[in-house]
Image 1: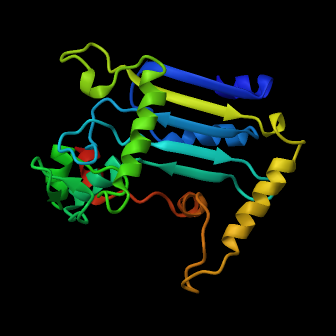
Image 2: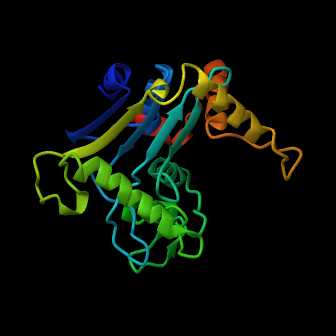
Length: 244
């Protein structure tokens, strides 16, 4: 709907309530870029799992932000990030595989660092993006709160910690924004300038000659191409669970 509105009027903003888990945020932003639009999508979650800075109780979700913008020569600029230090899916995978977590990803119920992935996944007390105050955790906390406002407060969806016990509905909220570049620039100017912007970033000198500078979306595009050709790897623990 946001895409339709932007194609007709230059910009479209849509809030969603009474929803559930909407999967990968990037899928929605990418749909806008495929139509030649700038796309932004955010979502709240049903069950909080991220602790506010200086706290020890989960109040926010991983609350992702996805952004995509189309170029002309290059593949779309593509950003899809959780506002927690680690995404819930990666935490779950580490728990399945029995791998320890780096310190700063999660907390124990007393607010101390938790490195046991299985216990961290059970407790669901992850840190906001950045982890500590010294490493910018206040920024991740602020971004997560911003996503919550756009996704729940704006649409009237339920903020997780305030959901009544035994509520009949999840009432998760999302937010989608689509912008038509032609509402701001002559046709093609934005795309050409975005290509130049992306080329400049990729062309900047790397600290390690074996690791060139990437642009958000480069790793995802590369993995997609590889998995289209070779298949999608599935961890043994997940395969066993699905079969069971």
